[in-house]
Image (cartoon, rainbow, N blue to C red; front, side, top):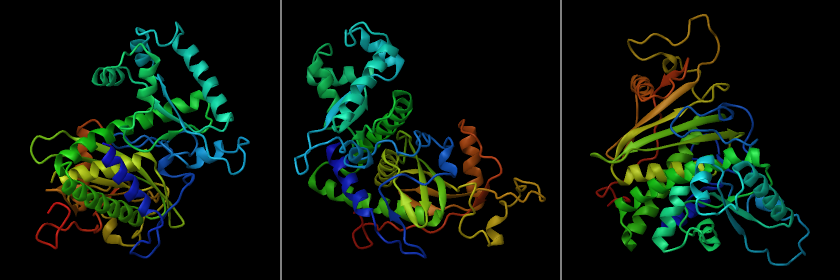
Amino acid sequence: MAAVRKVVREVLGAAAGRPSRGRRRVLVLAGRRPGGGAGDGSAAGPGGAAPPGGGRPPGARAGGEGARAAGRGGRVRGAPPPQPVAVALAVDAGDFAGLAQYGLFGGLGHQAYLRRAEEHLTALHRQGLEVHLRVLEAGDFEDYCEALGLDPRMPAARVAYAGDPELAGEPFVYAGERMAELVPVLLDDHRARVRMSVACAALLSAVGEDPAGQLRMAAVMRYVTSVYLALAEGAGEGCHLLTLRCHGPEDGEELTSAVDVCVEEGRLYPAGRDAEAFCVTLAAGVALRGEGALLLHGDPSVGGPGDDRAGDRSAPAGRSPAAPAEDTRPRPPVRGWALTGGRLRPMTAHEVFDELADDAARGLPFPPGVDPRPGFPLPGLRGPGEGGGPLG
């Protein structure tokens, strides 16, 4: 897991500032994402909740905006920064009840515990300390203690769990939020971590953990990062939604991920943990030579590239348009790509419509008034006979 996390950090970090190969230059910037657009509502895809909390993406990287803000607490100029403090919070009432049996909370009720935790976090933040947070999940904590031979009743077990170096993804840095704002963001981050952990395990099983496997993993991650940037460039201005589902070629476990892609004036704003989880999930699907589908839901408030091409605006053959002829409101475009044998190929508009219908059959909402469109070309993946691909 640590090896996957290291590769993800290096590859996504190297992507920052990389020029795109098309008409615009798409940059990855640190900071808040632009306001408005599809990213401000609930995401329509699997696991696709938009980052709440007014703009800070969940899972901000250590040393990012939250950490810089915390550093303005009066530390002597030139002094080395203090070590980060790791804290695990039982933000879910069910987890809190399950863990109370170990006497971890001194007889406090859940709301009183959260109030005390907020006071503690606020005090650490005001001291200029960088605080890394994770969810204290009852079942996972018990499994962790059993695996390492720790007594869950002892404070040392919680300390070790909070600072677990095998935790997937970059640290979640506390930025001074009130608990009411922090809890939904931290829970979203936790869900993305879980998806990322499952995808990491699948990726490692596909590429192997030996040195050759590490090279294959790095190559696959570079490829999916180039796909992610190409999708952002092709999406154009606005806040769009990427959804992904994939599984192994036979009866493999289905992996899902979703991420908001926000582009403003040619700049791609970071999506934090969701971007990490998306790239690792796609990498697992590619490495497993899996099957699945990737959909790009365009920002409903912004016309996407190619809106002037009448051929792209037609509904699939045999389908009625989603909006009456007299309705001149923009129809959000949805483009798609099929994952077949670990290779992405553009879908037709008809296939995109069918994929949306399949999603609805699986219980996801069918987005109203959308405009199914073909996918555009994405970077290719070289195979073993094509100059040594990542799986060769």
